[in-house]
Length: 242
Length: 171
Image (cartoon, rainbow over all chains, first blue to last red; front, side, top):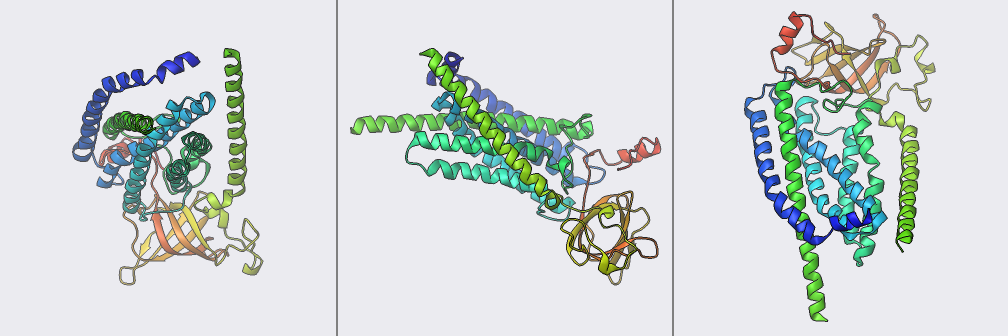
C-alpha cells in the first residue's frame, strides 16, 4: 500500500495527471457552472413561497456543500499525511485550503443575503450558522498556524492535527438542523426519503453543484502545482547559494 | 525494515483514532451541556400558560423565571389569528406548536414570508404566563423572523396540488 501511495505522490505522475485533467475540469466547470447558474437565474421557476429570491440557491447550496466537502478532503489528506508522513498529502491539504475558504466565505455571503430576504435577518446565532462560522475560522486558523512555524515539517504536523480535530465540526454542521431547533431549514437534498425540491428547481441546482465541484478540482490542481513549483524553486535557490 | 514502517504507521493510526475519539467525546459533552443555549427558539409548550400566580412561576432551565427575559419563541401562525391595525402598525397573532398557544403582539413590519400557517420566530419577552381569555400566554415581540421549510416548488404548482388535495400541510 505504501508503494502505491508513493507512486501516487510521485511529482512526475502528479504533473502528468494535473496536465491531462486540468483542462477537462475547467471546461466542465465553465459548462456545468455557467449552464446551471444561467438556467437557474433566467429560466427556472420562482418558488411558490419565496418567489424570485429562491434563485440564490444556485450559488448558496453549491458553495455550502463544497465548503464542507473540501474541508473533509483536507481532513482525509491530513490523516494520510500524519500516518505516512508523505509531504505530498500535506501539500494537497495546503492546496485545497484557499479554495475551501473561498467557498465558505461565498456560502456565508450568499446565505446572509438570502437570510435577509426570506427570514428578515442578515445573521442569527442558530446552530447551523454558528457551526459554519466555526468552519470559516478553522480555515483561517489553518493559514495562521501554517505561517506560525519556521520549520516546514513542524508546520505540517501541527496544521494536520488542527484540520483533523476541526473535522468534528462537519457532522455538527450537517446535523445541526436536526439536533436543535434552528431558523435555518432542514436538509432539502441529502435527506432520508429523497430530495424535497421540485425537479424544475433541482436540475439546474445539481448542474451548478457539479460546476462548482469541477471548479474546485481545477483550482486544486492549480494551487497544488503552484505550491510544488515554488517549493522546488526554493530548493534550487538554497542549493545555488550554498 | 518494511515491518517496522508498517508498525509505526499502525501506531500513528491508533493515535489519530484516539485523538479523534477523545475530541469528539469532549465536543459531545459540551454540546449536550449547552443544549438549552443552542436551540434557537423555545416553543409555545415551553412557556405554556400556568394557572398559579405569576410570582410562583419558575421557568425551565436554571429555575429562573422566563417572564421578563428576552427569549426567542418559534411556532406556526394560527390560521385566521392575524390582526393588523393599519394606522398604528400594531400586529397581533397566535403562535402554536400543536399543543400550547401564545398570543404575540408586535409593532412593525412583518417579513415578506410571514403568512398564516407558516413558521415564524418572534424575539421579545413573555408578558404573562397566566392564561388570557382564550387560554394563551402573552408575548410582546420586538422582532419577527419568518421561517421556511425544506420544500421548494414552482409558483402556481401548489394551487393545483391543493385542488387535487395532494397538498402536504406543514407539520
